[in-house]
Length: 552
Image (tube, rainbow, N blue to C red; front, side, top):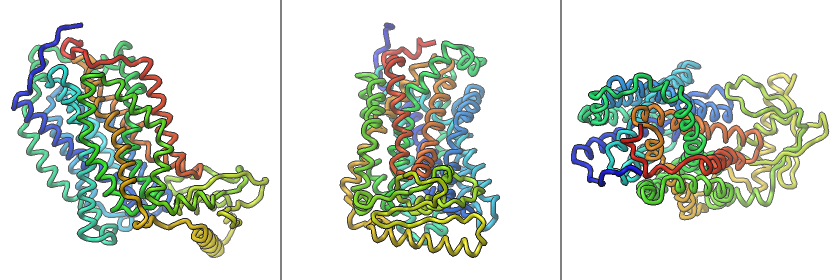
């Protein structure tokens, strides 16, 4: 084992630079998460040409689009950072992110300009994703290479808090706006305010980043002529490095990502969509849990300097895989006990010929569901009702059973428009009446919400997030040689978080829409987290004692 220099405190100048980098990253995450926090409202404003279920899924797809392009941003801006330096790359990314967010705030809706609205919105999301893809790898590498040996986990954990703090800030601005102007005005036009005020955060971020000094490590490497002339080729064209990139993805970041997004975003979506808790209340619950849980990023980052990164990260993934089903079940009982009681007492079952049931995922709104099975499932999905499926005789019309009540479905194929509309209204009313009679609530009763239990459950989910995310930056930095570290660590991080994590809400809701069970979306993070535990446990080596300056 190489002899490491004695740990030293960071100089005032280094502390200032790292603070500035972290603060700018908080603002950048704030911009990015505004969209996710307001997905339900954005669905109505920009995808109103679709049915409610498809509009929400399409809004989540637009949210996911920003994550999908993050790896390309990592490659593009990583190369740019190696060519012109970290400081100016940070300026470019924050400008792209901030301006894209501001434009969303003034963008006309579907009702004003039609299909151009969602097209422009998705283009802005893509720009945001590219900018964010260039942010994290540079910030994590920048901080880690300034940190004394034996303190990298603690120092880089501050960067890990920025995503959660950005989400917290976005929730606070949304909540403040909702409180001041009221829910009706917020849904109509007030949702624009958090996007528009981001121009102030942009100005602050640019001012902060202009005051930053260039990375001493970059300056030294450039002066000595040791920078890689082909970092992409070295990272991904040589098996010894590509192998580590692949292992970092499937054995670390994929599991970390699904736990992260389940604990912070999917929990919020689940509260508002499945459990029908009003948006303001759900935001308060999540914000409180983030406030309580965020310090544990530093706790687990520091602990990883002592016992290792790997056991903490994999333990978080394992706990998630083992406990998600009971935890989300408990969340239902605490947040909407009437719904939990109705589900236990009066199960909803769709009895239908499987050959008449289509895949319910319809993001473009072009598929017209006409079979009795599809219509029945669409009505239940639109009411956020969890149901089971049962087979029926071939050609028989679908039947919805709600407790002891049976409602026979209908097919709209070949029906005149007026008659189809009439049957649709009658069918929806019959289902709604039966659900009401069976005790299914249209929304969560604020008086019956067990607030302490809801917050406790959300804090637990956030603690799992801090376990997997707190030590990950230090571990990724330590896995790769200095000369290709920025490029090599950025790609698995952004594929893991951008693709595996960013697609979680969309994938989970598509699974729920198809199967009918509101808990089945949890299979996605459980399987990914479980795979990461197995692969990471078998093939990933501990890195906390690696000398990152000799690792090339």
